[in-house]
Every structure is written in structure tokens, then in C-alpha cells.
Image 1 (tube, rainbow, N blue to C red):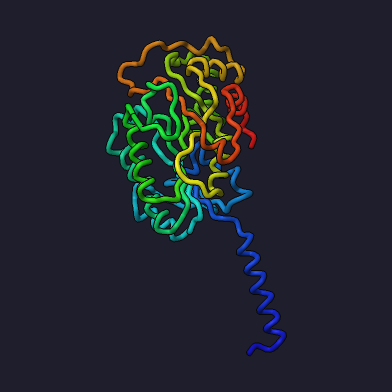
Image 2: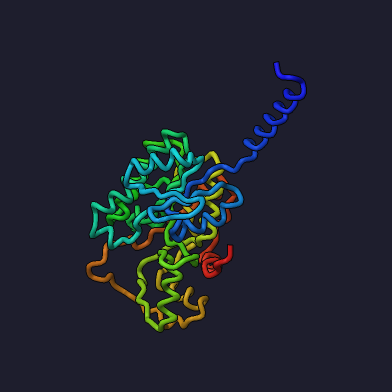
Length: 314
């Protein structure tokens, strides 16, 4: 038996340890943390989660090298980090590249998510998976969460296969579908449409933009906050994150040009598909039903999305 004094110290230490365990931040692994969306989540989640930045090319504190196309890399990273939640933003979203390099894209956009879901299931880790409106062909007036996927290009097909496989592998998964994500990036080299458009217009370039493709975009700030909230909630399944209305991509680009301080005349109407370009859905309108019902999310309109998208502050 411990002496009375030592016993008291032991009990106090145990209580302090339990307190620390009770208030510890859950561990969030962001795979694709160097990307446009992942970097936003990393900044906004820091106050609520113990964030690890995961990528094939990452270094520094709170980071981990991980290649989702290699099962061993995923297993090793998970064993080291032991995440409570994994957010998978890593993917190849260049639709035309996906059409040309089907085998490579299958590894990144399908096998990679399968590897992550398999390890999440083994460890009981919650998974948030980023999907896309491109799983639909754009021939219907609107697509609710329970609509059947009808992809028309290899990118959409790879994402639709990944959705189905993940749902079968791991029950504690949230699939977030979104269309065009608008916002400013924190670093160069991401796939931020707003940054690319701004650079082109600053250079005086005219930008041809389709008049026949309609989208209901979301700003990256709102999307990141949704991801963080869903990482902490028990609900699973498919959720759409999108604006309440839609714009032709031509009109959307004009509105962004004005907000960025450029002439809308630099946006040139493109009335027909470019030869050799991968097919796209004409009107992939995502109906955002489940998210407001579950979380109280206030669905913004396109003007509100655009206003938020030009602001880089968090």
C-alpha cells in the first residue's frame, strides 16, 4: 500500500491525466492539405482540432508524407498519427487530364480513396470524402442527394466509383458533393479558379467562358466550415454544399471580374464546346437539402458566394 502522501499525489496525478484526456483536441488528418480547399480547412480547424497536414509533398511540424495510391503509405501514416477524423481532399480534378490518363486517374481518384476508407474502417476513424457534381450528366432540372449518378466523363466516373466503394467499406463516412468552389488561395499553384481568373485579367487577357454550362457554386470559406462541422457530428451519408441558385459560367465570370476590379468585357462568350475537350454536364444543379436540415446551414445565393470568394481573410 502506498503511504498516505504518495497515494494522494497518485490520485491527483490520475485526475489531472483524465482531465487532459477529456479536453484534448480530436486529431484531424487532412489529406491534400497543400491544396486550395485543404489549406483553408487547416487554418479554420486549428482552434478545434489537432491538425496534421498530409500530402505527398509536405514537410515541417504537424505534417506527414502520405501517398494515398500506396496502401502501405496510408497504413504507416495512420499508425503514426492515429487520427480521429480524416478529411480526404486529395484528387486530380483536371477533367481533360482525367479523360487522357484514365489509368493514373483511377489510381488517384478511386484506388486512393479506397485505401483511405479501408484504413479508416480498420481503426474506426471518421472519414469525410470530397466528391463532385460531375457525377451527374446535367440533363435534369436538379439533383438532390439521392439522385442516381450519371457521369459523362472519366473524372465523374472515378468519383462515382469511389463514392460507392467507400460507402460499402466504411459506414462512418460523410460524402460532400460540391460544384465549382470559389475563393482565394493562400499560396500559388493551387486550382483556385478565382486566382487564375484574376491573373489572366490582370494581364489583359480575354477569357472565353461557356454560356451554356450552369453551376451553383460555393465559396471555400463556407465549404471549409461545413467540413469542420461534419467532422464533429455523428451523421453520415451524402450531403450537397452549393448555392441556392445558379449562373451560367459566362455570367459568373463576368460578376467575378467586376468584383476583382476588371472589365467584364474581358470575359468572352463561348457558345460551343471546344473540340477535344472532355464532355461536361450542362446544368449540374445540386439541391442542398440535407445539410440545412441537419446542421441549420444557411444556403447562400450566388451573389453571396461571390462576395465571400474574393476575400482571403479567415
